[in-house]
Length: 290
Image (cartoon, rainbow, N blue to C red):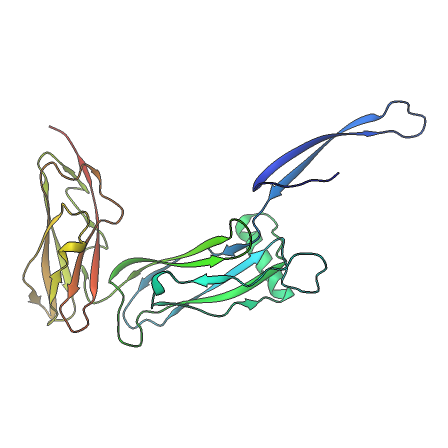
């Protein structure tokens, strides 16, 4: 019985098989059900990593990325099974804080270890016939002294391989910790418990703090999202060797109905020869009542 899989995911194929032995004149009908599961020519593991806080002076973080296949091999002497070519790696926008190594073919013993790891994560046996390891490194700064934006980040690496659907993406999330932070928490919530009545608008005050006494900050109005947020930054105040600023966010009446967008943020930057941006995530929900 020949079978051709034309799509991904589990499928059941039901057939009725006739069998006759000895003096039987009528074949006995035996129902036969075959469970098929179409799979991609390659996968990656992991597809998402959260490195948590990434403070000043931290060493680079390296992630082992595995590009592997359950149907293709990296052993050129493995008979008729198709070969798994090395992946094509692309860093979007030439992100200077992200770098990748040359893909390295895994040995048979390493493929077995990867299969056991995948099985533990998926709860079912996963064959690994071919695989490569790629070291993905995230740096806290680069050689020319440039620093990433302060605040939450999401960086990506594109991985391409064989097949019509031959593209995957590794997502690296975290929080860049630096010279300035909210005095309380990592997210600025507008209104009372994150809500306000859009009929009346809202004014929320928050405090920024830095360990540097001589640090100067300024707003970046064109990058504040959403644009209806009216933000003012108070004068710096030094207390016990630390510098504080009052940050005021005003939502005008009849603006911001519903949840703020995921990318809502107040953006500032340091006033220096090499300015560094600070992104303060903003959350809130505007309801209408009255």
